[in-house]
Amino acid sequence: MTEPDPLLAALRAVALRAEAARRLTPPAGMAVLASIVEATVALFGAEAASIALYDATDDRLVFTVAAGEHGEEVVGLAIGPAEGVAGYVFSTGQPMALADVAGDARFGRTTAEQTGYVPRSLVAVPLVDDEGTIGVLEVLDKRGDAGFDLHDVELAGVFARQATIAIRATRIERDTAHLLRSVLTALVGDGANLPDGASGRDAAAAIDVEAVVREATADFDADDDGALWALADEIARLRAADPGQIDLVRELLAVLVRRAEHDRDLERSRAGRRVAPRSDAAR
Amino acid sequence: MSVGLPAWSEPFSAEHRSELARSTPFAAVDRAWAFGSGDGAGVTVAIVDSGVEGDHPAVGGALSASVRVELDGEDGRVVDDDPVDVVGHGTACAGIIHGLAPAAELLSIRVLGADNRGKGQAFAAGLEWAIDHGASIINLSLSSRSEAMFGVFHDLADRAYFANVLLVCAANNVAVASYPSLFAAVVSVAAHDIRDPTVWFYNPRPPVEFGAYGLDVEVAWKGGGRIVATGNSFAAPHVAAFAARVRSAHPGATPFEIKTILAATATVPR
Image 1 (cartoon, rainbow over the protein chains, first blue to last red):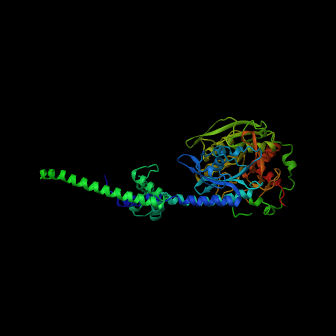
Image 2 (image 1 turned 120 degrees about the horizontal axis):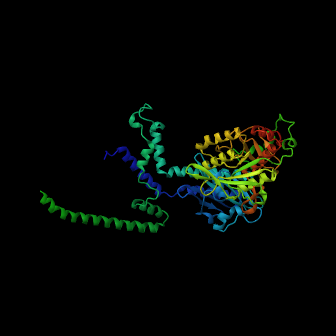
Image 3 (image 1 turned 135 degrees about the horizontal axis):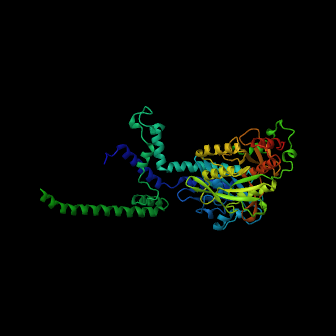
């Protein structure tokens, strides 16, 4: 066993607090996304607008926010990343507008079957940033007879850009590993991965940022349901509770803590009685 | 409404079209000469997309073969496929090409599907296969934004060019570079706002050199249906079809020459 690295210990403590804060804070970005789809609906005079984001863990496009009279049904729906029009736009990065002439809305079948809403026309644009395509913005049924034209495709692209910026900002802020990585890189510079001496830097400064981040966040598995995180999640859920409930929970917690302290004192005094004679014998 | 986006369609819009005007150095080249009686006969056009529905009336039996790319890790493998379309987009492209160049043979290379997730590696494997398997013109409505794929697509665009294969690519309307649609060796196409399939413009200011019909295009779609579609990816197949007709009339024309003929016969902007 090597000496515990004080820097790593400090980083672990920072990471733990950041992770706890992340879990305690509701996803603020969602509010921004919700306002973007609401603005989209208002500006287009559309029946609905939605944003589907790619979830790499499940390899699905998940409809995350929606607005408009017929928007809500779609939230939570997950489709394959190359499935239907949303999947095509996500996979190819090609924005497009479609309108049904035959009246059987083949293009909307995938989601229509699951939401009960069959659009007559839609525009779908990719959410794209420097790191790739992260989702799709869809606008359904512009009010009136006119379908979506080229300017609508471009305008939807403007909203998609806003949504992308909001999502990226939220993801960075909420990704503890990303946070640590950027702070460390800012501190030690991009030359951190160079071999000793290559940058003329002190060998101690030539740290492998990736390895340090990995080690500092080693305990933060996304699916970790350990007791500490369960508690954090419960506290996060409490934020939505009414003040009366919070008071009740606080009183219950106070009782539980007093009880735990009492039990611990009792345990200690019992242990003390058991241990004392043996200590005497040892002498 | 005008929005401040780097929209590749903008040079072809009513407000900006006059800026495309110039004294063409090829006044003697007209469409009658360019196409002759060329209806696409003897030309194979590959459609790298979501597949093509072979029995769709709009495709008119012109589909000669269908393959698909299966990704094994990072490596793409090309296998035989049923003449099916998982979205409808590839059938839309096939219908446009068949409508304008009815004697051209169509080849479908499906690079989308449950396994491929629209990965650049699948696009690249499909494109490479098309170059190596007799396609004369390749319609590509897809592109990749992956920096890691820059070199791969650049190499493939050069390979196609040197193998006498013309790549016709839909430009992307997003403010991020995408490959291979913005490479010099390809014919890059955005949509204009005139509802006429015989109107195309040449833009002397690259990267997007051609504007074609891409607004409210009635196209074939999945399940034997038809829909009205708007986007650059519906403009590209128009140019691919006219390129097939040029090549049908002038079998010896190289990609560079076909591009020049298409520029010379482009609609005069007003």
